[in-house]
Image (tube, rainbow, N blue to C red; front, side, top):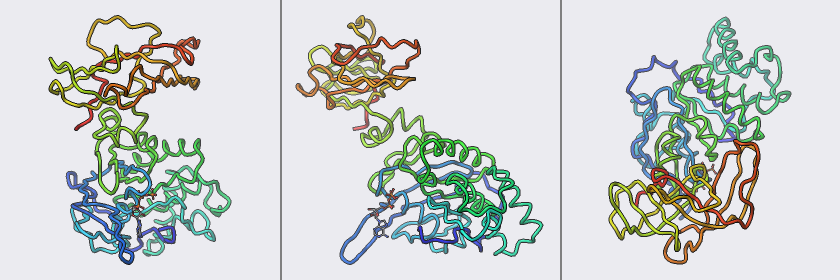
Length: 392
Ligand SMILES: Nc1ncnc2c1ncn2[C@@H]1O[C@H](COP(=O)(O)OP(=O)(O)OP(=O)(O)O)[C@@H](O)[C@H]1O
């Protein structure tokens, strides 16, 4: 796709007014198998997705999971091996990219280096024969939107990466597509600029109200900007949900591990009553979770690092809470918070925990750091609702 020099679909019709309820984009049983010689790569395996109009939707997953292929099938640059692609209800599976009412933005910007900012943005409108006065007003609107007014005559080569990406965005939005597809658009920027641009992108999307489909392998980026996220793994959608849902209630071990820092504990249930299950960790630790499971059942639990309290003495035993003793292996002071790695007592030795250590984040609200140090004995404690039992 990097060879694409003209992402603006010159021939696409102007977006009709949105019809609520009809998804902006729907994938129905869409699969893609690449064949080269005798080799077959199942890049995408029969996924079903509906993306609502005006939604900021992210495809998130590790390298090679099929994000870009999925996006290219929406854009029309790749033909699905199976299934149907719909834009606003219409079957576009066999429709050419320049006839689909979507535009794409790439990591490489793909701007025309010999044209100034104005001409880059105006390019698609000119090809469609839009009158000059309308071009000037629309390009002006776009320059305001991306905060580049006054830079009309500048050539892209004289701009920073962040500014070039704003020009690329303006060019992709100027003909008001019904959806914008963004493939790792911030990948070339340094961390600070990338974070600033995440906020910008979200604001721009809210201002224009156009559906954004965003491809990224960066979970922080997806959590920051998205209304909903599809977490992909090996060509399939492993979980679909809002950022909070995906973070707090991961549907699988893969999602728990890919999003944020996950702490995994497993064991076999020794007590189950009143919607709570308990299993031991080592000699004196126990994990308590809000869940339904039978005594003897094997369960796997995740708990997020910020949900765990760190004590230097055994907390009082009242109430059904997880309490696990251990030894601090690592302390990383990060200013606002401190990250501890704690090796659990007896973990893994008795069919108890799958992970011998837990990560704990504590907020440095008091300003003085007299927390435990390396080698100190500690107790970890958290509430049952923060032990999230992974689906079997
Ligand atoms: N043109 C192609 N021919 C053959 N195999 C391909 C082709 N394009 C992608 N693949 C393979 O399909 C799988 C999915 O690739 P895809 O680019 O969609 O993944 P991705 O999640 O976007 O990864 P990345 O973040 O690295 O771009 C990979 O195994 C990849 O090697």
